[in-house]
Image 1 (cartoon, rainbow, N blue to C red):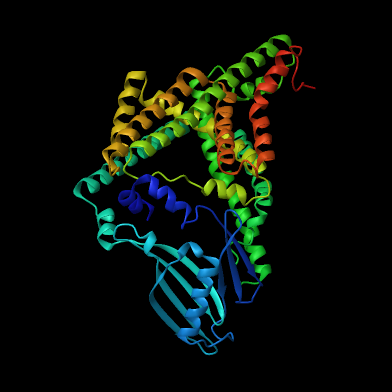
Image 2 (tube, helix red, strand yellow):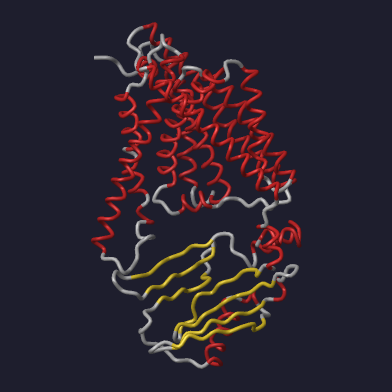
Length: 481
């Protein structure tokens, strides 16, 4: 709907309408009792103003049997008192549902001042017995415009086939590489499983942090005991599947490092980053962490900067309306601690980045051999993959973004990170933390000030640790006993 408004009314008017009458953020609070069909859903604006009350009653629940005139008077009085921004409104349609013990009504009104092009702005309000319920609003888009937006041309179909073919070739290339790694005997399952278990342990605190949303998926026709058991089973299955998937990825990623750097043990690299039991190892640890911190901040913040820049460019030149994704922010608002959620996610993202770097390095070594071949493949991929874009402006920006991603990936694996696993971990973790600091600062600085401060300190912790290493004796670190 906002895309249609943007095309007909341009950006300034769209920005005005997305604030009033639309609501960019909505709180939903649900009231219910187990095994009771009666349920209420209260919707509030981001500022806390009540917007609507949703009522669900059993079909045979008692209620008033209002006439159309009486129900309409209730609805229109409600609109004038609770939604004065909708006045003046015009009656458009009505539907009636006669139940055993009550009569429900649905009323539709047009709001002429919010009409854009051929799209009428309509509001729908219901009565459930004597209660005014289920306020809804939005533009009714012309069928012709909807059809034009959804219509697939020959170019669109060919582009989809081409992208699918590229995806299939990439899948075959990865599988062939995995077969080669498996045949090499470089896979060690024990460290991979330990890494996977370590990451999966975070599932429990994440679930505790998500408790405010525990009942979101609860159906009132289900006994509470059954729901608790189902959620426990889901948690166990999630943990088991996470261990399996992460162990498989970690096994191949770490095996790739063993093949590429046969003289350097992965276990020794990990120990070198944590343990310093003599002078030489102390200096090795200092150099390793210095490189890791420099690379981690450069790449982590670089990937975030590229995403931010591309978003701004899309907003400036794209015929498609650029809408900020509020999903991640809403997720942070619905947990007990946004800082804790981000820290746990950043650990998973950091470990995932290590595995991803190993797989990327292995694929590069097998299929590219040198930068010229990699550049050619990157250009072909960047030209083909965004070809499903509707407008040439989006295609051009996407080509440049994919090229930049490919170059930064090559820079990370071939030039900067190489065998430094800590650098890859910090790149992924810093990118995740910086993303959520920016998100919370942009949309909820007043509410989440303490979480932002906490995340800033966590983001700076590698620098603090590096300073501690450089200002301590060479043996500083976890000591062997």
